[in-house]
Length: 342
Length: 297
Image (cartoon, rainbow over all chains, first blue to last red; front, side, top):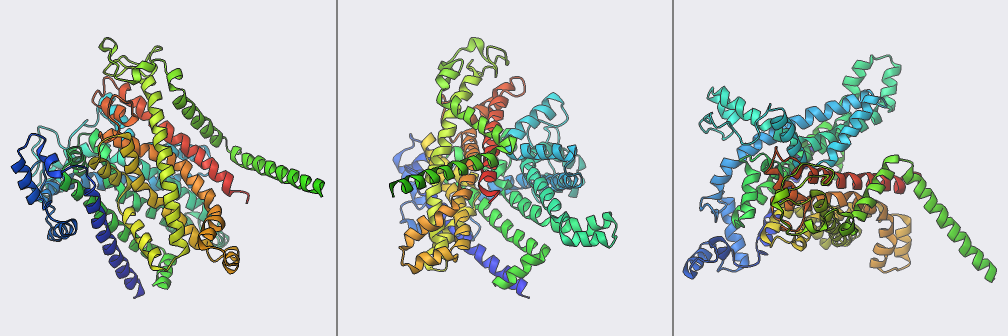
């Protein structure tokens, strides 16, 4: 019962944070030096055009009023109009976001499978050469930024050994499936266009792998550390003393509690993927959300920048709530702690 | 009397020497910390003496020699040359300067601000202004630092100073969070209560009683963060929102070089690897610092 109270409190708090995020982003968007309308139209635009755009953007109104106008539109799902493409930003983003979510989903999958399995292996053979190799590899994984992995992977696996395509989302010869969800993979599977679905998957393997390396390495280290740590605890010793087979101890008693820490770290990493994807999508010339964001930033497309940051903020905050709930579910201690706090 | 005082001073000095010796022992127990220290010192040395260390110092500027463009790594150009015919090794050496400057300036801005916010938030926990500033911190933490820094940098003009500002704005909350947590766990300790009962000024308690206990974790985080701040700076210039050419910046070199993949792979790969080397160096050093400050106490 009080678990629900905790969850509801957590959600209400996050809504407050998001409200704060909207204020923060709005303030930041107002520090832009110079006139956004002038920047959007270029130096040679006539004064009357700039004036009209200023009126359109509500720039002639006081800042507080502008904030509430913007927030009102936001709550209606209207993010404004891109100053560059003159299209509604919501429309732009609904086209680009699914492409990025495909990468992120695959990346999260890689992160979990590679990270946890490497960590398990490392803990199982702790203090052997295999453990040493895995520890060095995961240290390198942590200190190497995703875009460096992206460049190295592109170089090795698509140029040197041409297994994967170098750039883009789908091969030029293949027609993308009709839009249902916006994800080529899901749409392809739904419409029976398996060729397109597979081709898209083939395109996103390298970017997803590059994105997942840091998180996977971190997860491997955490898994190893907490498994080695837990393996020496009394309850495991007791189980061993009772003569319970090691395989059973490992599966039932050791693995589950050891995964709480890596899962919570990984969940944060997954939530941050949308931000980290920025540079990776650039390397692979991938038409995703992050690339849309970078284009907007390079062209000082004010409302598009605000929208991109806001969406990432919302995604990150929602993910954090979900993580807290999952942890509360997984870890009785956290659950009890939460009950006491409420 | 005089002799006693002098011997006290000598004893204190000996004790301090002893402490330094022990700290060094704890640091140097792990060979990788030493590797990290040597790497960081080399990077700093190269950055300071770039004009003397770099084989072609004039290549750091707007130098063009299309005759020797895109030459592969060789003895004359260990990292090869870029599309303008400039020596990449020399440009990397010069890029270390702004990279380190970025890290140092951002940390100098961020650490005092973040720590002060965290101290006030933690020590006055429960008061309305403490709640307010920690909620503001949470709002900043709700946006990944890279994205926030990119957005701010995008709205400002692309210069080194503006990138530093952009990264600073997105970085201080992490120190606020760290110090906040540590302050809460300390504020009910007897030594703090004793200072309160003596009527010590609240700010004096915060800064001279509580803060010194946090210096270890703060120092550790600063060492580790040097690499990550430099990476964020490189990411800004990678996107094109950092320093502008012809100033050599690691991120710009990587993204420019990426256009010439795979034929002229060295143009982007070597600067990219140098970014990894910087992060690795500060991470190894940071692990050593943590070891030095936490173990054996």
